Image (cartoon, rainbow, N blue to C red; front, top):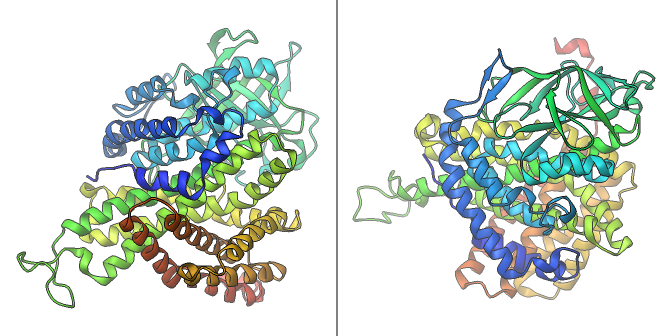
Length: 584
């Protein structure tokens, strides 16, 4: 089985040299406590927890899975998961970014990005248990009443409770206008929630004393479609407004899904049978609160993709260095050995460089998006908050879709590099490929992200987020226009950015547009990374590695954008002209 080592050197490079978070933290509320020493200590301790506690449970958790006792409707997690969660809470990780008045440490949200990456690299299934607690917390923070924040948000921040998102129904996936779950008002101000929800991550487990379900449902007089959706708090155990826990609520796990991957993450069918709940926010305005949860979750799933890319790369690199196979085409590189290691072979190096380019470029993109969260949540400047929110909204579908699709490609390469050994269970890389597959599906498929990017983030907003981003790219290219050392990167980025704007005016195919946008975005962050490395105090070897990897990206990966541009310019007729009957 593969081991995991947190890529702390590159994480610190991205945070401090590339994104210069120290300067941003110094001017934001809560950031004054995020000194360089504090951040370094947080990264070191997070690495120890993920490397020493979570990573050793990854393979065993996959083998054991979760078990449901149908008689009691209780779920038991794999051996070691409950103890690991207790250590997670003891370490204060659940409260890292939450406001102090609800028990949090109020450190910048962007510090959660490297922690999240480490959790997901070490053990993606385990990381799913606290994942949706953050989305539930954000929804309660922004849309709940103060008593709801005191009663439900505080225990989630402390880690004593976890949260869920209950959206999907058996007949209703991404089209939430079709949902049927009902909520009937009671005279005391509570509601009786009834319906069935599926694909509920961490809907039932043995890690915490209570679970807070955030459930989309319809009131009796609700209008049809998405305009008639409300959001409700439905705890596993009834909880009154003072926080007192009562009897078991009438919400239960009916079954758990048997999945391709993330087998140690419990995915539940949840039945609500007149379960007691509370309305969160305004009636028929649940969609707004849901999007608060969804945007948080989509950024988090993008970081899941990043975590898997990194883990796949580490496993591939270790194997390529130790596995002896054939001789280099230019002659033996290790004449004292019976064969050369895999890493000398060009095609192996192509796959390794692809993984490395995705991991380091993706890290820059994901952490950059997380710094925008800091600005949206904490900047005292209203104009800065607005710009950051528009830019973040534009980037979220790119982060989610691109990094998860690249995770699938990277885990595929990991299996290929391991050859026959990659296809068997013992090496562990086949688990990475199985785990990665879901990331392109949950919290909105890649196709849904493409619709969101072009439909909501471009068309509905007149491309304001894209405009902000293109202006940022333009400013970077202008600032480095005379830098001969960066010319090989700045010129192609400027050209691609210009084409990006032109394509947006005439785009017809959403998926191609998303991938084009993603590859150009990574090119920009790779150019920035080389510039930041050159200006840093990093070692010469570190700087050269950045430049070599950037050259690979620009030569081998960025040309994919051109293929997507051709696809977009071909129009939609080749997709839509054939009658439905001819598919049969």
